[in-house]
Length: 218
Length: 348
Ligand SMILES: [Zn+2]
Image (cartoon, rainbow over all chains, first blue to last red; front, side, top):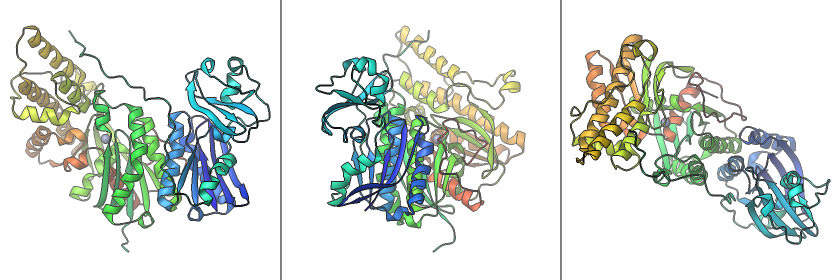
């Protein structure tokens, strides 16, 4: 089955076309650019490019998989809205996968995954042999409790390596992998499980303050 | 199959998620979801709250509009979306949705100017717009006077507010008077029981000196402060505040300036059509005063019904339909949301 994968939970803007079968998952075409401010501009052309490269028409898609974050809200919403609109237009199911799992799923042993949450905070989760056992959370790096993790992965882990105090393996990706997101959704896709509404993992409430008493002008 | 293209419009520039479907000048279906109640306790639109609400509301709103029009996405010939101006995060949700729909359905996309859409929506009510026309757009987000010579190519701004938007002034004065948010309809209602001539509030940028520099600009900040001072003085003296009279006098000051400048623009440019749009166009006094003053100079006033004046998807579809009919090239798939999109570009 042909599956479109998108993730916009980090500065990486990811669009991929994957084939999911009983035998396994493989990525047929992929476009990734890193630009924390251009999700809105880049994602759609990248989807189109990935489809074109694989010679696939949108109507050939059987499902759409989207990373649901956590991630900076504005960029995250671009991926989820685009995925939801395409799913709605094509009448195919949409499946959400926690974006941190796109980094944590292939890791063996105990590992911390951390991405940049801006405002000097990280989004983080702890994995045991690829399974998320804690998180996702958003905290200051000093407040992260990595449990039994012996390594840390992700752009946040790299930026705050000093505070987190965990070694960052140089060969691991720092942004969620489209292949892993597709692989994690594969059982649901193959069993024909109904799709779900794509709900962002915001983890933070909107910044908004209720106005106080009326200010006097004179 | 009709030869007139079927155009879908998506609007998310502020707190309304709107989808409209138009063929030519005919509105076939529209749906609107508003997050206004979620903003009420903050006394104004909270951008992040609006953006979250757009994401949640988009697909159901789209479905309702399609169902109402009795069409499917496959029947749509082009998709138009508000690319700006507006709240950056909110615009981005609508643009992302439009791109997703356009990609999946393999249709052209038009990223359009929200203010031009406020003008175009009148075609759904009154047919083709005579050009040139003067447009007065007044809402919580904008207060602009525009010269519309060719709606498909660009609109010329003549003037705009230099501080608060007209609708914002309504909200702030309503709050001052203990009336709910959004303030427009409540001020209008209270004003009907009051005397608009009872208190003389200032008319911003109407002095002789302003005629040179700010002839077609607006200012409502001084008015708002004057109302606050007046109310506070009564409260300090332990007097009852005549809410209806204050509302009526404030509304009279706003409508007086708006219509005087709009008519002056028509006469200055030799234009005999005035279109009024935006949420404040729903104000009953503004409509009456505009028609009264326009009649003196043989100017025709076109105001769409209130539901089309406030932000909605139909207005975006109406502009899209106009652009398709005029043979304007669609936008590219990398079109940005532009919170400060200039009026000189109708299509992004
Ligand atoms: Zn508007």
